[in-house]
Image (cartoon, rainbow, N blue to C red; front, side, top):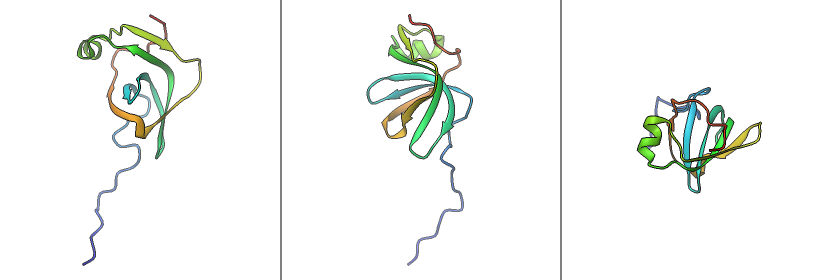
Length: 99
């Protein structure tokens, strides 16, 4: 028996939205930045910061307050999609100032 191909094929960018800010949890840390590219194996972020501590996670996502943030130098930051644990849209603006 031959398996039927699904009529619906998602693009590599689904469910990501270019231009949105994301708080991304990877297997080792959090990154916060504006999504500029979605590749088959990687995401590219601009205006990116490494979040050393979110504090209480639900409070950080709700209020926008992060305990400890360290900005990357200007330029793109590449994140391997295989390292991503979860992500959410960040509605509080970029975090480019070390706290």
